[in-house]
Length: 552
Image (cartoon, rainbow, N blue to C red; front, side):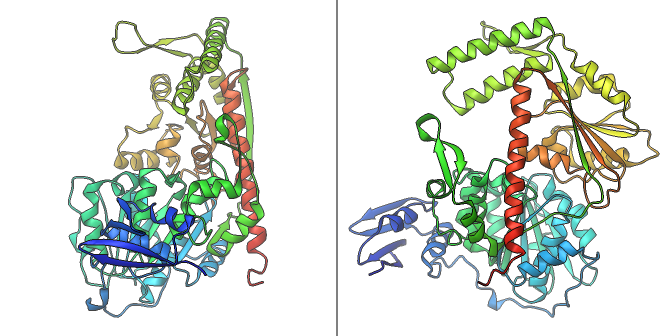
Protein backbone atom coordinates (compact mmCIF):
# COMPACT_ATOMS: atom_id res chain seq x y z
CA UNK A 1 0.00 0.00 0.00
CA UNK A 2 1.33 3.45 -0.94
CA UNK A 3 1.94 5.90 1.89
CA UNK A 4 -0.59 8.72 2.26
CA UNK A 5 0.61 12.02 3.71
CA UNK A 6 -1.95 14.27 5.41
CA UNK A 7 -1.40 17.94 6.33
CA UNK A 8 -3.08 19.44 9.39
CA UNK A 9 -2.77 22.20 11.97
CA UNK A 10 -3.05 22.23 15.75
CA UNK A 11 -2.17 24.74 18.48
CA UNK A 12 -0.69 27.17 15.96
CA UNK A 13 1.60 24.59 14.37
CA UNK A 14 1.36 22.55 11.22
CA UNK A 15 1.90 18.82 11.10
CA UNK A 16 2.21 15.91 8.68
CA UNK A 17 1.06 12.36 9.30
CA UNK A 18 1.82 9.30 7.19
CA UNK A 19 -0.38 6.25 6.68
CA UNK A 20 0.39 3.42 7.08
CA UNK A 21 3.98 4.48 7.80
CA UNK A 22 6.67 7.00 6.90
CA UNK A 23 8.90 6.09 3.99
CA UNK A 24 12.50 7.25 3.84
CA UNK A 25 11.93 9.51 0.81
CA UNK A 26 8.77 11.14 2.23
CA UNK A 27 10.54 11.89 5.49
CA UNK A 28 13.56 13.32 3.66
CA UNK A 29 11.30 15.65 1.65
CA UNK A 30 9.32 16.76 4.72
CA UNK A 31 12.45 17.54 6.71
CA UNK A 32 13.72 19.67 3.82
CA UNK A 33 11.23 22.42 4.73
CA UNK A 34 12.73 25.93 5.03
CA UNK A 35 11.69 26.29 8.69
CA UNK A 36 12.27 24.13 11.76
CA UNK A 37 10.71 20.68 11.99
CA UNK A 38 10.36 18.17 14.80
CA UNK A 39 9.40 14.50 14.61
CA UNK A 40 7.31 13.27 17.55
CA UNK A 41 5.26 10.06 17.80
CA UNK A 42 5.10 9.46 14.03
CA UNK A 43 3.98 13.06 13.43
CA UNK A 44 6.26 15.69 11.88
CA UNK A 45 5.55 19.18 13.24
CA UNK A 46 6.56 22.38 11.45
CA UNK A 47 6.25 26.13 11.93
CA UNK A 48 3.04 27.38 10.39
CA UNK A 49 4.47 30.01 8.02
CA UNK A 50 3.63 30.94 4.45
CA UNK A 51 6.89 29.39 3.27
CA UNK A 52 6.50 26.12 5.20
CA UNK A 53 2.87 25.53 4.31
CA UNK A 54 3.59 26.29 0.64
CA UNK A 55 6.54 23.88 0.71
CA UNK A 56 4.49 21.07 2.22
CA UNK A 57 1.64 21.64 -0.23
CA UNK A 58 4.06 21.67 -3.18
CA UNK A 59 5.44 18.25 -2.27
CA UNK A 60 2.39 16.51 -0.85
CA UNK A 61 -0.36 17.93 -3.05
CA UNK A 62 -2.68 19.54 -0.51
CA UNK A 63 -3.93 23.13 -0.14
CA UNK A 64 -1.58 25.39 1.86
CA UNK A 65 -2.64 25.89 5.47
CA UNK A 66 -1.64 29.51 5.84
CA UNK A 67 -4.42 32.09 5.48
CA UNK A 68 -1.74 34.64 4.49
CA UNK A 69 -1.91 33.34 0.95
CA UNK A 70 -4.34 35.59 -0.89
CA UNK A 71 -7.67 34.50 -2.26
CA UNK A 72 -8.07 37.18 -4.92
CA UNK A 73 -11.72 36.49 -5.72
CA UNK A 74 -12.83 39.57 -3.76
CA UNK A 75 -10.67 41.88 -5.89
CA UNK A 76 -12.27 43.93 -8.65
CA UNK A 77 -11.13 42.94 -12.13
CA UNK A 78 -11.68 45.35 -14.96
CA UNK A 79 -12.04 44.29 -18.56
CA UNK A 80 -8.78 43.21 -20.12
CA UNK A 81 -7.65 43.86 -23.68
CA UNK A 82 -6.82 41.29 -26.31
CA UNK A 83 -3.14 40.42 -26.33
CA UNK A 84 -0.99 42.39 -28.73
CA UNK A 85 2.79 42.62 -28.99
CA UNK A 86 4.68 45.81 -29.82
CA UNK A 87 7.42 44.26 -31.96
CA UNK A 88 6.98 41.61 -34.60
CA UNK A 89 7.99 38.16 -33.36
CA UNK A 90 10.71 36.11 -35.04
CA UNK A 91 10.10 32.51 -36.05
CA UNK A 92 12.04 31.35 -32.97
CA UNK A 93 9.96 33.52 -30.64
CA UNK A 94 6.72 32.21 -32.18
CA UNK A 95 7.98 28.65 -31.72
CA UNK A 96 8.83 29.27 -28.05
CA UNK A 97 5.42 30.80 -27.31
CA UNK A 98 3.62 27.96 -29.09
CA UNK A 99 5.57 25.39 -27.08
CA UNK A 100 4.78 27.13 -23.78
CA UNK A 101 1.15 27.97 -24.62
CA UNK A 102 -1.04 27.73 -21.53
CA UNK A 103 1.74 26.23 -19.38
CA UNK A 104 1.92 27.67 -15.84
CA UNK A 105 5.41 26.17 -15.29
CA UNK A 106 8.00 26.61 -18.01
CA UNK A 107 11.72 27.14 -18.70
CA UNK A 108 12.90 29.31 -21.59
CA UNK A 109 16.53 28.38 -22.26
CA UNK A 110 17.09 30.64 -25.26
CA UNK A 111 20.59 31.52 -26.44
CA UNK A 112 21.52 35.18 -25.87
CA UNK A 113 20.30 37.29 -28.75
CA UNK A 114 17.09 35.27 -29.15
CA UNK A 115 14.89 37.99 -27.66
CA UNK A 116 14.40 36.08 -24.41
CA UNK A 117 12.90 39.07 -22.58
CA UNK A 118 10.29 39.57 -25.29
CA UNK A 119 9.36 35.87 -25.10
CA UNK A 120 8.95 36.06 -21.31
CA UNK A 121 6.87 39.22 -21.42
CA UNK A 122 4.65 38.01 -24.26
CA UNK A 123 3.96 34.70 -22.52
CA UNK A 124 3.16 36.30 -19.16
CA UNK A 125 1.06 39.12 -20.67
CA UNK A 126 -0.98 36.56 -22.60
CA UNK A 127 -1.80 34.94 -19.25
CA UNK A 128 -2.76 38.36 -17.82
CA UNK A 129 -5.03 39.19 -20.78
CA UNK A 130 -6.72 35.80 -20.31
CA UNK A 131 -7.37 36.60 -16.63
CA UNK A 132 -5.10 33.82 -15.36
CA UNK A 133 -2.77 36.14 -13.43
CA UNK A 134 -2.96 39.68 -12.05
CA UNK A 135 0.68 40.70 -11.76
CA UNK A 136 4.28 39.64 -12.41
CA UNK A 137 7.29 39.58 -10.09
CA UNK A 138 10.61 39.47 -11.95
CA UNK A 139 13.67 38.28 -10.02
CA UNK A 140 16.99 38.75 -11.81
CA UNK A 141 20.56 40.05 -11.32
CA UNK A 142 21.01 43.48 -9.76
CA UNK A 143 21.00 46.34 -12.28
CA UNK A 144 19.36 44.03 -14.83
CA UNK A 145 16.15 44.36 -12.79
CA UNK A 146 16.28 48.13 -13.33
CA UNK A 147 16.89 47.65 -17.04
CA UNK A 148 13.70 45.58 -17.25
CA UNK A 149 11.66 48.61 -16.17
CA UNK A 150 13.66 51.35 -17.86
CA UNK A 151 14.39 49.68 -21.21
CA UNK A 152 12.85 46.28 -21.84
CA UNK A 153 9.20 46.71 -20.80
CA UNK A 154 8.70 50.00 -22.72
CA UNK A 155 10.34 48.39 -25.76
CA UNK A 156 8.16 45.27 -25.83
CA UNK A 157 4.77 45.98 -24.21
CA UNK A 158 2.06 47.25 -26.61
CA UNK A 159 0.40 50.58 -25.83
CA UNK A 160 -3.00 48.84 -25.60
CA UNK A 161 -1.87 47.02 -22.43
CA UNK A 162 -2.46 49.24 -19.34
CA UNK A 163 0.61 48.75 -17.21
CA UNK A 164 2.25 49.94 -13.97
CA UNK A 165 5.87 49.02 -13.25
CA UNK A 166 8.43 49.56 -10.49
CA UNK A 167 11.87 48.24 -9.56
CA UNK A 168 12.90 47.62 -5.95
CA UNK A 169 15.81 49.51 -4.39
CA UNK A 170 16.92 48.51 -0.87
CA UNK A 171 16.00 51.13 1.73
CA UNK A 172 13.66 53.03 -0.60
CA UNK A 173 9.89 52.97 -1.06
CA UNK A 174 8.55 51.30 -4.16
CA UNK A 175 7.45 53.91 -6.72
CA UNK A 176 4.74 54.12 -7.76
CA UNK A 177 3.12 52.54 -4.70
CA UNK A 178 0.05 51.75 -6.82
CA UNK A 179 1.99 48.86 -8.34
CA UNK A 180 1.12 46.92 -5.17
CA UNK A 181 -2.57 47.89 -5.24
CA UNK A 182 -5.64 45.86 -6.09
CA UNK A 183 -6.78 47.58 -9.30
CA UNK A 184 -6.52 44.45 -11.37
CA UNK A 185 -7.58 46.16 -14.58
CA UNK A 186 -3.89 47.12 -14.96
CA UNK A 187 -0.96 44.78 -15.44
CA UNK A 188 1.45 45.37 -12.56
CA UNK A 189 5.10 44.33 -12.78
CA UNK A 190 7.63 44.54 -9.93
CA UNK A 191 11.31 43.70 -10.52
CA UNK A 192 13.90 42.90 -7.86
CA UNK A 193 17.54 41.80 -7.79
CA UNK A 194 18.58 38.40 -6.46
CA UNK A 195 20.42 39.87 -3.48
CA UNK A 196 17.41 41.94 -2.44
CA UNK A 197 14.89 39.14 -2.93
CA UNK A 198 16.60 36.82 -0.47
CA UNK A 199 16.94 39.60 2.16
CA UNK A 200 14.42 40.08 4.97
CA UNK A 201 13.51 43.74 4.16
CA UNK A 202 11.90 42.70 0.87
CA UNK A 203 9.53 40.15 2.43
CA UNK A 204 6.77 42.63 3.47
CA UNK A 205 6.63 43.97 -0.09
CA UNK A 206 6.50 40.44 -1.44
CA UNK A 207 3.57 39.61 0.85
CA UNK A 208 1.70 42.82 -0.05
CA UNK A 209 2.13 42.10 -3.76
CA UNK A 210 0.96 38.50 -3.30
CA UNK A 211 -2.10 39.72 -1.41
CA UNK A 212 -3.11 41.93 -4.34
CA UNK A 213 -4.02 39.09 -6.68
CA UNK A 214 -2.68 36.07 -8.50
CA UNK A 215 1.00 36.76 -9.12
CA UNK A 216 3.31 35.01 -11.56
CA UNK A 217 7.06 34.93 -10.99
CA UNK A 218 9.80 35.13 -13.62
CA UNK A 219 13.37 34.21 -12.63
CA UNK A 220 15.59 35.70 -15.32
CA UNK A 221 19.21 34.50 -15.70
CA UNK A 222 18.06 31.52 -13.63
CA UNK A 223 21.46 29.80 -13.86
CA UNK A 224 22.42 32.23 -11.07
CA UNK A 225 20.25 30.21 -8.65
CA UNK A 226 23.17 27.79 -8.34
CA UNK A 227 23.08 24.96 -5.81
CA UNK A 228 20.05 24.22 -3.62
CA UNK A 229 22.07 25.25 -0.53
CA UNK A 230 22.49 28.82 -1.78
CA UNK A 231 20.41 31.42 0.07
CA UNK A 232 18.57 32.54 -3.07
CA UNK A 233 17.71 28.92 -3.93
CA UNK A 234 16.33 28.27 -0.45
CA UNK A 235 14.20 31.43 -0.59
CA UNK A 236 12.84 30.73 -4.07
CA UNK A 237 12.08 27.09 -3.29
CA UNK A 238 10.31 28.09 -0.09
CA UNK A 239 8.21 30.66 -1.96
CA UNK A 240 7.48 28.64 -5.08
CA UNK A 241 3.87 27.69 -4.42
CA UNK A 242 2.98 31.27 -3.50
CA UNK A 243 3.01 32.11 -7.20
CA UNK A 244 0.25 30.98 -9.57
CA UNK A 245 2.65 30.61 -12.48
CA UNK A 246 6.43 30.14 -12.46
CA UNK A 247 8.88 30.71 -15.29
CA UNK A 248 12.67 30.54 -15.47
CA UNK A 249 14.89 31.79 -18.27
CA UNK A 250 18.58 31.67 -19.09
CA UNK A 251 20.72 32.08 -22.16
CA UNK A 252 23.32 29.70 -20.72
CA UNK A 253 21.51 27.46 -18.22
CA UNK A 254 24.35 25.03 -17.43
CA UNK A 255 27.66 26.92 -17.09
CA UNK A 256 29.09 24.28 -14.72
CA UNK A 257 27.43 21.22 -16.23
CA UNK A 258 24.16 19.28 -16.24
CA UNK A 259 23.90 19.65 -12.45
CA UNK A 260 22.90 23.30 -13.02
CA UNK A 261 19.56 22.12 -14.40
CA UNK A 262 18.48 20.78 -11.02
CA UNK A 263 17.89 23.99 -8.99
CA UNK A 264 16.10 25.64 -11.93
CA UNK A 265 13.74 22.72 -12.63
CA UNK A 266 13.25 22.10 -8.92
CA UNK A 267 11.99 25.67 -8.55
CA UNK A 268 9.38 25.07 -11.25
CA UNK A 269 8.25 21.87 -9.53
CA UNK A 270 10.37 19.06 -8.03
CA UNK A 271 7.79 16.56 -9.29
CA UNK A 272 9.00 17.16 -12.86
CA UNK A 273 12.13 15.14 -12.13
CA UNK A 274 10.61 13.33 -9.14
CA UNK A 275 13.83 14.12 -7.28
CA UNK A 276 13.79 16.11 -4.06
CA UNK A 277 17.45 16.60 -3.16
CA UNK A 278 20.65 17.58 -4.95
CA UNK A 279 22.22 14.36 -3.69
CA UNK A 280 19.40 12.43 -5.38
CA UNK A 281 20.02 14.27 -8.65
CA UNK A 282 23.74 13.51 -8.52
CA UNK A 283 23.06 9.84 -7.74
CA UNK A 284 20.76 9.59 -10.76
CA UNK A 285 22.50 11.69 -13.40
CA UNK A 286 26.13 12.27 -12.34
CA UNK A 287 29.22 10.10 -12.01
CA UNK A 288 31.13 10.97 -8.86
CA UNK A 289 34.86 10.75 -8.17
CA UNK A 290 37.79 12.74 -6.81
CA UNK A 291 38.44 13.39 -3.12
CA UNK A 292 36.04 11.28 -1.02
CA UNK A 293 33.93 10.74 -4.16
CA UNK A 294 32.55 14.29 -3.89
CA UNK A 295 33.42 15.69 -7.32
CA UNK A 296 31.30 15.37 -10.45
CA UNK A 297 33.57 13.72 -13.03
CA UNK A 298 30.97 12.80 -15.65
CA UNK A 299 27.31 12.19 -16.38
CA UNK A 300 24.93 9.30 -16.91
CA UNK A 301 21.34 8.84 -18.09
CA UNK A 302 21.60 12.12 -20.02
CA UNK A 303 19.02 11.18 -22.64
CA UNK A 304 16.53 10.32 -19.91
CA UNK A 305 17.14 13.67 -18.16
CA UNK A 306 16.45 15.63 -21.34
CA UNK A 307 13.36 13.54 -22.12
CA UNK A 308 11.83 14.12 -18.68
CA UNK A 309 12.46 17.88 -18.78
CA UNK A 310 11.48 18.41 -22.42
CA UNK A 311 7.71 19.07 -21.94
CA UNK A 312 8.59 21.99 -19.65
CA UNK A 313 11.49 23.48 -21.63
CA UNK A 314 12.09 25.34 -24.85
CA UNK A 315 15.58 25.91 -26.22
CA UNK A 316 16.34 28.11 -29.16
CA UNK A 317 19.14 29.90 -30.93
CA UNK A 318 18.72 32.97 -33.12
CA UNK A 319 19.46 32.72 -36.82
CA UNK A 320 22.38 35.11 -37.22
CA UNK A 321 23.99 35.57 -40.62
CA UNK A 322 27.48 35.90 -39.18
CA UNK A 323 30.16 33.77 -37.54
CA UNK A 324 31.99 33.88 -34.21
CA UNK A 325 35.73 33.74 -34.93
CA UNK A 326 38.22 32.85 -32.19
CA UNK A 327 41.96 33.50 -32.04
CA UNK A 328 44.33 32.64 -29.19
CA UNK A 329 47.43 34.82 -28.83
CA UNK A 330 50.09 33.42 -26.50
CA UNK A 331 53.06 35.00 -24.79
CA UNK A 332 55.81 33.63 -22.59
CA UNK A 333 56.46 34.85 -19.07
CA UNK A 334 59.62 36.88 -18.70
CA UNK A 335 62.42 35.09 -16.74
CA UNK A 336 61.68 36.77 -13.40
CA UNK A 337 57.94 36.09 -13.63
CA UNK A 338 58.59 32.50 -14.73
CA UNK A 339 60.83 31.86 -11.73
CA UNK A 340 58.25 33.34 -9.34
CA UNK A 341 55.41 31.37 -10.97
CA UNK A 342 57.29 28.05 -10.84
CA UNK A 343 58.32 28.59 -7.22
CA UNK A 344 54.73 29.36 -6.17
CA UNK A 345 53.46 26.35 -8.12
CA UNK A 346 55.95 24.03 -6.37
CA UNK A 347 55.01 25.43 -2.95
CA UNK A 348 51.33 24.89 -3.68
CA UNK A 349 51.95 21.29 -4.71
CA UNK A 350 53.57 20.72 -1.31
CA UNK A 351 50.61 22.40 0.40
CA UNK A 352 48.23 20.12 -1.48
CA UNK A 353 50.17 17.05 -0.37
CA UNK A 354 50.22 18.19 3.28
CA UNK A 355 46.55 19.19 3.31
CA UNK A 356 47.17 22.93 3.75
CA UNK A 357 45.18 23.44 0.54
CA UNK A 358 42.12 21.25 1.06
CA UNK A 359 39.02 23.33 0.45
CA UNK A 360 37.45 24.94 -2.59
CA UNK A 361 38.24 28.37 -1.10
CA UNK A 362 41.92 27.46 -0.70
CA UNK A 363 42.08 26.24 -4.29
CA UNK A 364 40.41 29.42 -5.60
CA UNK A 365 42.83 31.68 -3.70
CA UNK A 366 45.81 29.66 -4.96
CA UNK A 367 44.54 29.83 -8.54
CA UNK A 368 44.04 33.60 -8.34
CA UNK A 369 47.61 34.06 -7.06
CA UNK A 370 48.99 32.14 -10.01
CA UNK A 371 46.80 34.12 -12.40
CA UNK A 372 48.09 37.32 -10.81
CA UNK A 373 51.68 36.46 -11.70
CA UNK A 374 50.61 35.60 -15.27
CA UNK A 375 49.09 39.11 -15.44
CA UNK A 376 52.17 40.83 -14.01
CA UNK A 377 51.14 41.24 -10.37
CA UNK A 378 52.06 39.67 -7.06
CA UNK A 379 49.99 40.36 -3.96
CA UNK A 380 52.22 40.70 -0.90
CA UNK A 381 50.82 40.11 2.61
CA UNK A 382 53.30 41.57 5.16
CA UNK A 383 54.15 39.50 8.25
CA UNK A 384 53.57 42.52 10.52
CA UNK A 385 49.82 42.46 9.85
CA UNK A 386 49.75 45.61 7.71
CA UNK A 387 47.55 45.87 4.61
CA UNK A 388 48.43 43.67 1.60
CA UNK A 389 49.85 45.50 -1.40
CA UNK A 390 50.49 44.71 -5.07
CA UNK A 391 54.00 44.37 -6.46
CA UNK A 392 54.29 44.83 -10.22
CA UNK A 393 56.17 42.17 -12.19
CA UNK A 394 57.55 42.86 -15.69
CA UNK A 395 55.38 41.21 -18.37
CA UNK A 396 54.99 41.47 -22.12
CA UNK A 397 51.22 40.94 -21.92
CA UNK A 398 50.42 44.67 -22.46
CA UNK A 399 52.69 44.66 -25.52
CA UNK A 400 50.71 41.75 -26.96
CA UNK A 401 47.50 43.73 -26.32
CA UNK A 402 48.96 46.66 -28.28
CA UNK A 403 49.91 44.33 -31.12
CA UNK A 404 46.34 42.99 -31.37
CA UNK A 405 44.86 46.50 -31.25
CA UNK A 406 47.02 47.63 -34.17
CA UNK A 407 45.26 45.09 -36.38
CA UNK A 408 41.74 46.18 -35.39
CA UNK A 409 39.82 48.74 -37.37
CA UNK A 410 36.83 50.11 -35.44
CA UNK A 411 35.43 49.74 -31.97
CA UNK A 412 36.68 47.07 -29.57
CA UNK A 413 35.76 45.77 -26.11
CA UNK A 414 38.66 44.82 -23.86
CA UNK A 415 37.36 42.39 -21.24
CA UNK A 416 39.14 42.38 -17.87
CA UNK A 417 38.31 40.27 -14.83
CA UNK A 418 40.23 42.49 -12.38
CA UNK A 419 39.93 46.17 -11.59
CA UNK A 420 43.71 46.93 -11.53
CA UNK A 421 43.92 46.02 -15.22
CA UNK A 422 41.03 48.34 -16.08
CA UNK A 423 42.76 51.09 -14.06
CA UNK A 424 46.07 50.99 -15.95
CA UNK A 425 44.29 50.64 -19.28
CA UNK A 426 42.28 53.78 -18.53
CA UNK A 427 45.56 55.59 -17.94
CA UNK A 428 47.02 54.24 -21.17
CA UNK A 429 43.96 54.73 -23.42
CA UNK A 430 42.75 58.21 -22.54
CA UNK A 431 39.67 58.07 -24.77
CA UNK A 432 38.46 54.70 -23.42
CA UNK A 433 35.28 54.30 -21.37
CA UNK A 434 34.86 51.69 -18.64
CA UNK A 435 32.08 49.59 -17.13
CA UNK A 436 32.85 47.68 -13.94
CA UNK A 437 31.24 46.94 -10.60
CA UNK A 438 31.85 50.42 -9.28
CA UNK A 439 29.95 52.17 -12.09
CA UNK A 440 26.29 53.03 -11.37
CA UNK A 441 23.56 51.62 -13.62
CA UNK A 442 22.52 55.07 -14.84
CA UNK A 443 26.12 55.76 -15.86
CA UNK A 444 26.41 52.39 -17.60
CA UNK A 445 23.57 53.31 -19.92
CA UNK A 446 25.26 56.61 -20.85
CA UNK A 447 28.58 54.85 -21.40
CA UNK A 448 26.93 52.23 -23.59
CA UNK A 449 25.26 54.90 -25.74
CA UNK A 450 28.50 56.87 -26.11
CA UNK A 451 30.46 53.74 -27.06
CA UNK A 452 27.94 52.66 -29.69
CA UNK A 453 27.57 56.17 -31.15
CA UNK A 454 29.65 56.20 -34.36
CA UNK A 455 30.23 59.95 -33.97
CA UNK A 456 31.41 59.91 -30.33
CA UNK A 457 35.07 59.27 -31.09
CA UNK A 458 35.13 56.50 -28.44
CA UNK A 459 36.46 53.27 -29.87
CA UNK A 460 37.48 51.33 -26.74
CA UNK A 461 35.31 49.98 -23.93
CA UNK A 462 37.06 48.47 -20.90
CA UNK A 463 34.59 46.06 -19.35
CA UNK A 464 34.35 43.42 -16.66
CA UNK A 465 32.19 40.39 -17.56
CA UNK A 466 30.47 40.57 -14.18
CA UNK A 467 29.22 44.14 -14.76
CA UNK A 468 28.80 44.36 -18.55
CA UNK A 469 28.52 40.71 -19.56
CA UNK A 470 24.79 40.40 -18.83
CA UNK A 471 21.90 42.57 -19.93
CA UNK A 472 23.78 45.11 -22.08
CA UNK A 473 23.36 44.90 -25.84
CA UNK A 474 26.59 46.17 -27.37
CA UNK A 475 26.15 44.97 -30.95
CA UNK A 476 25.62 47.01 -34.07
CA UNK A 477 28.78 49.11 -33.93
CA UNK A 478 31.32 46.73 -32.38
CA UNK A 479 32.61 43.46 -33.84
CA UNK A 480 35.83 42.98 -31.85
CA UNK A 481 36.47 41.54 -28.35
CA UNK A 482 39.79 41.06 -26.58
CA UNK A 483 39.91 38.95 -23.40
CA UNK A 484 42.91 40.34 -21.60
CA UNK A 485 42.09 38.01 -18.72
CA UNK A 486 39.35 35.55 -17.86
CA UNK A 487 38.15 33.71 -14.79
CA UNK A 488 37.12 30.07 -14.46
CA UNK A 489 33.47 31.02 -14.97
CA UNK A 490 32.11 29.69 -18.23
CA UNK A 491 28.69 31.29 -17.82
CA UNK A 492 30.04 34.82 -17.57
CA UNK A 493 32.39 34.19 -20.48
CA UNK A 494 29.61 32.99 -22.79
CA UNK A 495 27.28 35.78 -21.76
CA UNK A 496 29.93 38.40 -22.44
CA UNK A 497 30.60 36.93 -25.89
CA UNK A 498 26.94 37.43 -26.77
CA UNK A 499 26.98 41.16 -26.04
CA UNK A 500 28.28 41.72 -29.58
CA UNK A 501 26.85 38.62 -31.27
CA UNK A 502 23.07 38.98 -31.41
CA UNK A 503 20.14 39.31 -33.78
CA UNK A 504 20.83 42.04 -36.32
CA UNK A 505 24.58 41.44 -36.55
CA UNK A 506 25.59 41.20 -40.20
CA UNK A 507 29.36 40.93 -39.82
CA UNK A 508 31.54 38.23 -38.28
CA UNK A 509 32.41 38.89 -34.62
CA UNK A 510 35.99 38.26 -33.53
CA UNK A 511 37.40 37.22 -30.15
CA UNK A 512 41.04 37.27 -29.07
CA UNK A 513 42.21 35.40 -25.96
CA UNK A 514 45.53 36.49 -24.44
CA UNK A 515 47.14 33.46 -22.79
CA UNK A 516 50.42 33.08 -20.90
CA UNK A 517 52.10 29.82 -21.94
CA UNK A 518 52.45 27.05 -19.36
CA UNK A 519 50.31 28.83 -16.77
CA UNK A 520 46.86 28.53 -15.24
CA UNK A 521 45.62 30.69 -18.16
CA UNK A 522 45.78 27.59 -20.36
CA UNK A 523 43.74 25.51 -17.90
CA UNK A 524 41.07 28.18 -17.41
CA UNK A 525 40.65 28.69 -21.16
CA UNK A 526 40.45 24.94 -21.73
CA UNK A 527 37.88 24.43 -18.96
CA UNK A 528 35.63 27.20 -20.26
CA UNK A 529 35.76 25.77 -23.78
CA UNK A 530 35.02 22.24 -22.49
CA UNK A 531 31.98 23.47 -20.53
CA UNK A 532 30.79 25.27 -23.65
CA UNK A 533 31.00 22.02 -25.61
CA UNK A 534 28.94 20.29 -22.89
CA UNK A 535 26.30 23.04 -23.03
CA UNK A 536 26.19 22.75 -26.84
CA UNK A 537 25.64 18.98 -26.60
CA UNK A 538 22.77 19.51 -24.14
CA UNK A 539 21.24 22.19 -26.39
CA UNK A 540 21.34 19.91 -29.41
CA UNK A 541 19.83 17.04 -27.40
CA UNK A 542 16.92 19.25 -26.39
CA UNK A 543 16.37 20.48 -29.94
CA UNK A 544 16.25 16.89 -31.20
CA UNK A 545 13.59 16.04 -28.61
CA UNK A 546 11.54 19.19 -29.16
CA UNK A 547 11.50 18.73 -32.92
CA UNK A 548 10.08 15.23 -32.41
CA UNK A 549 6.69 14.08 -31.10
CA UNK A 550 6.35 14.47 -27.33
CA UNK A 551 2.96 12.76 -27.21
CA UNK A 552 4.24 9.21 -27.64
